[in-house]
Image 1 (cartoon, rainbow, N blue to C red):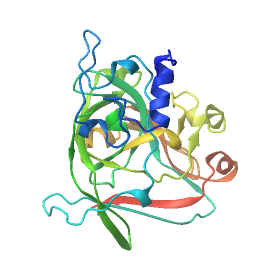
Image 2 (cartoon, rainbow, N blue to C red):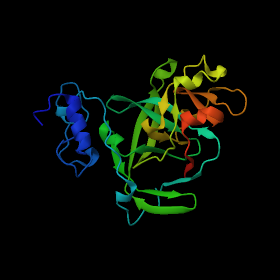
Image 3 (cartoon, rainbow, N blue to C red):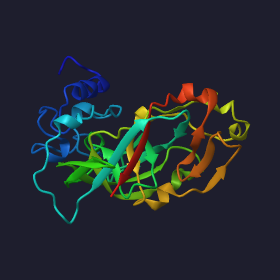
Image 4 (cartoon, helix red, strand yellow):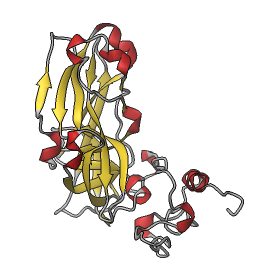
Length: 278
């Protein structure tokens, strides 16, 4: 490790070897569960990460494949969470999901920019299992049951976290929204979606709006109906059917709706996804 002088290189190596970011030695535990974790040695900082990676850009360890997640034999009846997701062959149009750039803030004041999916049909919020360790979120073990609309899987081990989210830029940056409960999940199974500046040129009703570039591959958590302030619509901008609708959220503008025609090649729709949490 001493031959790697850049903190970003050290963090990247830890990501590749799936090391615990607290002890920076073991690949058998996560930061929340590490028995050797300690706070950063750098003066003025109190978050749990090893001083060898202090100041590094945030890196997220690749999610664990669903097939390798250990099932839980019994589920606490007072806190079962069921996440349903199913997909079928897609029709001739693409459906835009509401993806927004967000700034996540921990209890120690650390902020990390990432992307979130806003889903008013989910009864709770979900976060990729690698994110809490990467940004030192406090977490608690809590079981999670995954399934589809017509079937349910085995309960798996999960963790419950809390944090605050806000806009990355713009007049909304001063507003912090509390996410009291979010459950870790190995993956979100989002369909491919990419919104680019080039897309905006095809829709005159969007050209004067500050709509950010987003990619579904960058989404690290889902905000559901348990965070009402996050999913409320403050304003909207419509055009004719088959064109995207711009929606103003607490995090800025985002797109939604059904797209037809040449936009499909940009959106690359492959499956129709239905997601909800019971």
